[in-house]
Image 1 (cartoon, helix red, strand yellow):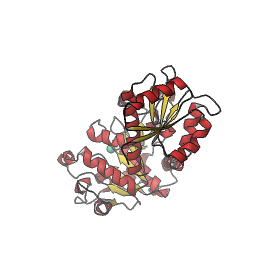
Image 2 (image 1 turned 45 degrees about the horizontal axis):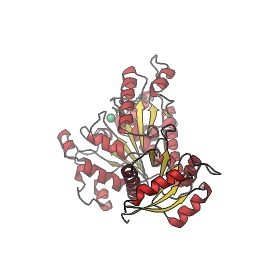
Image 3 (image 1 turned 135 degrees about the vertical axis):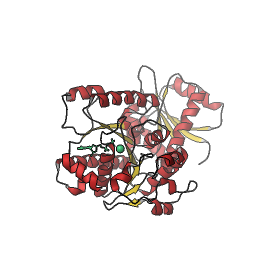
Image 4 (image 1 turned 90 degrees about the vertical axis):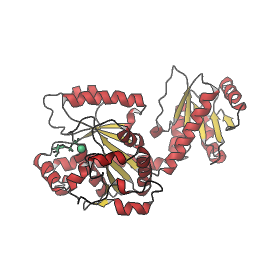
Length: 379
Ligand SMILES: Nc1ncnc2c1ncn2[C@@H]1O[C@H](COP(=O)(O)OP(=O)(O)O)[C@@H](O)[C@H]1O
Ligand SMILES: [Mg+2]
């Protein structure tokens, strides 16, 4: 990968095109390949010129309008990241899932243009390196809402759908999965992975091969050992796992700290568990604000309502209003089946696949895998 960024600009307003040329004239880190005014020629030019980044004016007129072109590029399997150029009156939100990798609002400086191009190209390069696995982190700002139970059963259900799946116990201090699965005390944890140059072969020695068909990366066996896991090591482990597996599921504790943020940042989807409980709903709203501040696109978070049939006097409308949208997934209460299966360390989706709660989890697994397949087929 050379340092120079090859840029294709799609712009039909000559003054704007001229402005961009002017900004790029004075530096050598960007090579302007061409300025195209006709959206219908762009796909062909992308395959001929192989740009690193395409800049598209959202207000492009003609047969293929700006945002339609962005969608065409996204669906055309070209892998090229797109920056959308817009005006403040017509805000566009960056959403890599929809092929909008960056946004530039006019007027912008040469510095903004160059840094945005570099950031988008860097993100695209990282995405290529981190493999194609989908990473889903179960999260909630509240304990006891069902994160661990759902993470385990969803991971097994996704495994049952034929996806190579690894579950990470991100509850580093208390290692909930260790207790749930009753693994021998000496079973290795992510602390047993080498910190530099981790290789695929190292995984064999450290992962717990669960009889349920999935592999599990356990947390350290003792509370104080959690501190020995650094964010850097974690990022390396995640990028390796994403190359080896098709699905990475993470169970997390109810805290916001560096380690949890590393999991959340790296995730394609944050599956946030909510229940019909007023304090849970309140902390979920506080968390939504925090996610907005961090800059996560709204589509990164999907809500899963657990024990959805126990509404405890709270109106589903109230929940929807608080979340600002309809939750994406629902799982009912499983009663004794859940408690018994958890106590035996087996997933309820296998203990009783016909139970309503197992069907709920299988359906959710299908929804998550389906989204993954849709995203992969666009790549
Ligand atoms: N849908 C459900 N139906 C019945 N019991 C549930 C359900 N979800 C979770 N539980 C029970 O609630 C308790 C807390 O669940 P857990 O998964 O440990 O939550 P968290 O990881 O969020 O702290 C466990 O005893 C579990 O068996
Ligand atoms: Mg838990």
